[in-house]
Every structure is written in structure tokens, then in C-alpha cells.
Image (cartoon, rainbow, N blue to C red; front, side, top):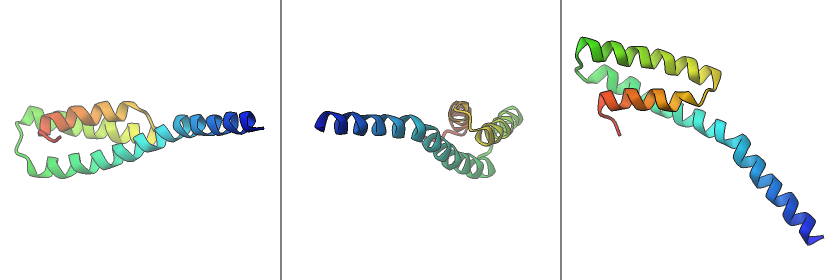
Length: 85
């Protein structure tokens, strides 16, 4: 009885981690997207860097909508250009 309970509890935790991770990643991407959007309006960049950040923002928005994990990497690149942590 206890073994069954522990097994079921373990499966529930594993399922929550596996299924919850994309949702958490999407929430982090949305938060990062807001930070990048805000910084992009304030930071003075070269034309090349400004164009790159704009392209990365567009790509990240598409990835958020598609719930792709690549969104984090895309926003990390934009944050690096904008010197955000």
C-alpha cells in the first residue's frame, strides 16, 4: 500500500516537472520579453545592434506564441546586446 502511494506520488511529481517546465519557460520568456522591450526603448545602440535586437524581439515573439524553448536563447542574446542581466 505504501509502495503504491510512493510510486503514484513519484509519478505525479515527475509529471508536474515535465509538463510544468514549458509553462514556466513561457512565463520566464514573457518576463524577459518585457525587460528587453523596455531596455530597447531606452538604450542607445548602433544601427546594426538596434536592428539585431529588433529582429531578436520579433523572433522571440514568434517563439513565445509557438511555445518554443528557443525563446530563452533568443532573448538571452538580445539581453546580452542590451547589457541586461
